[in-house]
Image: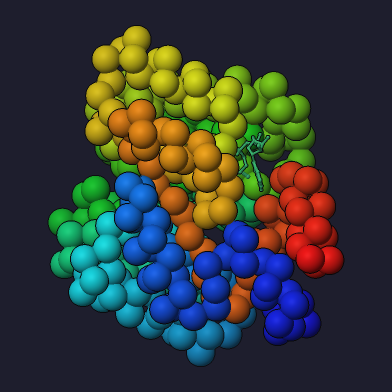
Length: 288
Ligand SMILES: Cc1cc2nc3c(=O)[nH]c(=O)nc-3n(C[C@H](O)[C@H](O)[C@H](O)COP(=O)(O)OP(=O)(O)OC[C@H]3O[C@@H](n4cnc5c(N)ncnc54)[C@H](O)[C@@H]3O)c2cc1C
């Protein structure tokens, strides 16, 4: 109901570029003009029908075509449950493989977003399998969540295969057996993993809005003589735009993750849950 209401769409606009492909292409152009690259995400997850999966896949192919045609500095982020992982694993594999092949032809890149823990192993298996195919090296990458206790050994394995990683804290509710629950523990792990990535010689994404994580990354990069073009920071559309600008002005690389599409509700709710002040922000706009 929220997704279909015009009020809902207006409220989500701060974090979601719009519902149509043109909306996100325009937002990408604007973000590119401010000196940042982009990763585009077509919202949708836990898709349950083949038709819907095919629709999402076609849209991603069109997106890659438009990015190439308009010469945008952008890649795409994809969720496996949107590509049919819950419907048929082979279908999800064929579709994702088709997207990576498209990215190879266009000299572009596909990031497989990381979802909740029931999907962690399968997502990493997908990335490794796709990355191992002829010509796919450097064209498909993984996401590691610092709150997961297993992440250090996952990073070691991905680095052995020189797979590009986006490091984030993690956005899902996970049980204590699997994930650190206290923020200081998550942060400590984030910094440990960030150091492994920055010294790996592979191009990775440091995805966070946390000034402490960013300061630790800058300090480590400078101390280890890691040049600014050896990795990128990543942030979400509409969040800490001041910090995005500051890092770009300081000569660092920044990629903005821009979601779009009608199915914005789960994404939007995760952003509100991360920061209760956002709910206040949304409420204020409601009254405005
Ligand atoms: C580019 C990118 C891709 C991501 N991909 C994934 C993924 O594939 N899988 C996954 O599980 N998670 C993903 N995430 C989400 C991530 O795991 C965190 O949930 C999210 O980034 C918040 O963590 P933080 O590092 O910003 O630190 P936090 O400690 O949560 O926040 C630090 C500070 O950042 C600011 N901030 C953080 N979140 C918000 C917000 N919603 N609104 C306003 N300000 C905020 C606030 O100032 C806050 O004090 C991604 C994040 C980014 C930036």
